[in-house]
Image 1 (cartoon, rainbow, N blue to C red):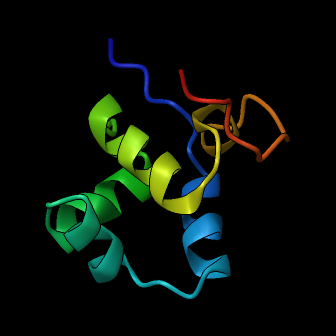
Image 2 (image 1 turned 180 degrees about the horizontal axis):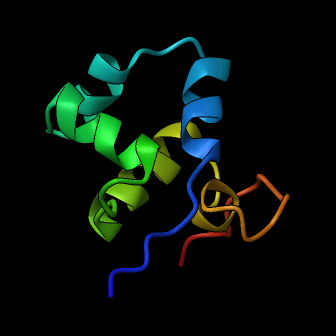
Length: 77
């Protein structure tokens, strides 16, 4: 059994900042088609790419995956 995380905020965050899937895919060093699968929940987004997105958007990973409504990322070590 495969359990996919709910990352419905991923699309909203991208659109709120006026980026398209191709632009974000380039940042993640992947294809637009692959990134689309992440947004649709068809495929899990690897943690390294999730970290890149959190850094790029200056958001916490917990916010991106819907675990909190606090946008501010945690302080780095």
